[in-house]
Amino acid sequence: MQPSPLANNQRITTIDMLRGFALFGIFLVNMPSFFSPAFQYDYYSLPIAYEGVDQWVRLFFDLFVQARFYPIFSFLFGFGFFIFLSRAELKSDHPRKLFVRRLTILLVIGLLHLVFLWYGDILHTYALTGFLLFLFYSRKPRTILIWAFALLVLFYGLTAAQLLVPDTLMKQVQYMNETVGNKKVEESITTYTEAGFGELIAYRFSEEVLPILQLTIFSVPLILALFLFGLYVAKRGIIADPAKHIRLIKKVWITSGVFAVPFTLWLGAVQLNVVDYGYKEDTAEFLLQQISGLFLAAFYISSFVLFVQKVPITKGLRALDAAGRMALTNYLLQTFFAVILALGFDLFNRISLSIGLLICLAFFSLQLIFSLYWLKYFQYGPFEWVWRSLTYRQKQPFWRTDRFEKTGDM
Image 1 (cartoon, rainbow, N blue to C red):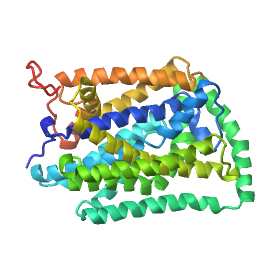
Image 2: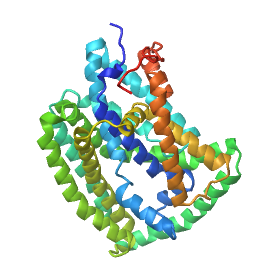
Image 3: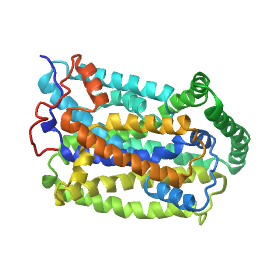
Image 4: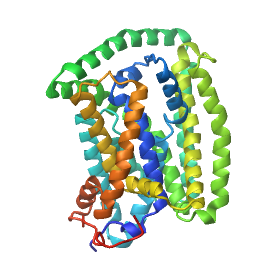
């Protein structure tokens, strides 16, 4: 049997719109790291001093954006895994082999993105973690949910255990981080602003890529847990048929909102130095950000699903749908654009947070327009087309056959 990809008219529109929404949040989160030595600051737990408007932009990011959108993207990956594999079973004699090929291609794309463009790539982590999903595909939804929560407890438990480390040891670690980290920040700025392409790639490989790959293993429990939530929701058909599960969706919406408020306020208190954890502040802040982020992500997802059920599909929502259908292309285009702007126009370490926010808003608006009109003429985004063609080992149709007809789906 010759496998074939999912037809556009079989897609779940709500998921694509949600993916487009998450894509915007991911860009907001990533934007500061394109224009600054953010990796060195994070890796060595160094504080970044913001002034004026930037202080409030950073606070807004930390409370409502940071660690709030990658859980949505991860959730959608797990959801997409089930949709792809369940439908591939109907069209292919080897559905799992097909998905392994799909993951392998994604891994290659992610590694190229990581090595040659930007340290913040998430695609390689998704691809590597995605192989573990095969262990859960045939499990009952209840079993999947138990594993998801167990993995969350494991991740948060290991993180919280750092709060038990004696202050004297934490003080030594902080001193070493500051001593080494400040030099690394200066080195990063010098390299990004003065080095040639080859020298920059060599620097990035040793100082960014290798540490990122080493840290990947620590993110697997959390990412897999988020994948499993998506797999659970897909298996139960909660978003595919939201009217049937409206009480559950509302329950998730209320519960996640109620729990998100105190954790977000607690995080804000730490950010504003109302609560002081001394040498353990970085650990406490990270833990609060992750926990509040999980609740807010669930709140954002359920709010979005409820919203879409209540309002007519406007052109803006169609644009989000189009951007979500081209998520891989738009994700990579964001990197291409930001790297060219930062390095090609000598703006690295010269863009304030507030200006970066405006750039992000402007470029994503262009991406919405671009996606909407691209999909009027083409079936897939360019990178999606390559990914699909390699996955199915045959050239996929690129042009829309109905592009000269007036249709209501775009």
